Length: 365
Image (cartoon, rainbow, N blue to C red):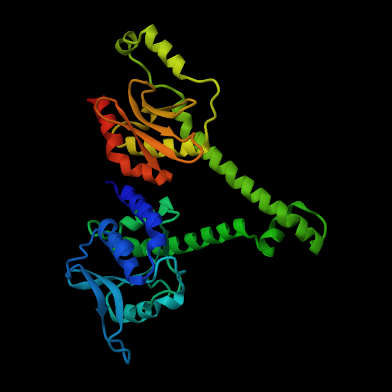
């Protein structure tokens, strides 16, 4: 599995099991140990790499423990403090991390509840853990721009200098993005005033504030939707054109095949945003084997087909999303026999990455 696929698979596990997790120990076993093992790549059963219940005497605080210490060359590199799943993370939860950060060689501290991971370092003062994280990973809503930075913390490519150098920019960009997201969800007066005074010439009275609160909220949401739609159109633009077909390949196309293609195209089709998002996931998986412009799509009444070279004889996957309740992902074996798998969310498509790649490889061979 690719790094992003392993992250998506863990996110799916967390989403499916979070309601069954009731204690901190269960959170560690079900979510956090798999994160340390599969995502960061450290052996949780090797005390030379991962030390559970790590103890370091800190002044008068004797015998206090941090849940995990990740070691490299006999030195502590990362400290991890865990809280119960679904329990909101607060800086007050990090008291042990603050103390241990100052008396160990660790430059990275992590506070987590198994769903959200807050990464800290010492940007504000040397050997003193910052009060605000430089990176926040939310498995329920993964920010793909953070994946390359997260990968720098993994065992195979651990690059502390690069992490620290990028931490300040990550810290402020992350805080700005979270602030913008909060304003989109529940705009404050300063946000309302900022936009109102740029489009309205009158005084910013209470009545005007109330009027423009709904207008600014609606405008920001519409702007966000427009940006998403524009990105989808851009991403799919290359897929609207078939690759050039050589003379030999063109000669092999018969009128029967063209007729069959026409029959499969349906005139009463409604392509949904969810189908396009699913297509992008399958396309991203298949791009490890072929150029992205070769992965095409066709929509029909009963399913959304994803094809290699826009050829219905080269099916990669099918999205059966037209049902009112259950969604299905159709994948193909070497004989082009489709098997439908029920899925609850688009993230589950990543679980079939190897099968999808296998189909593409078959057509390449």
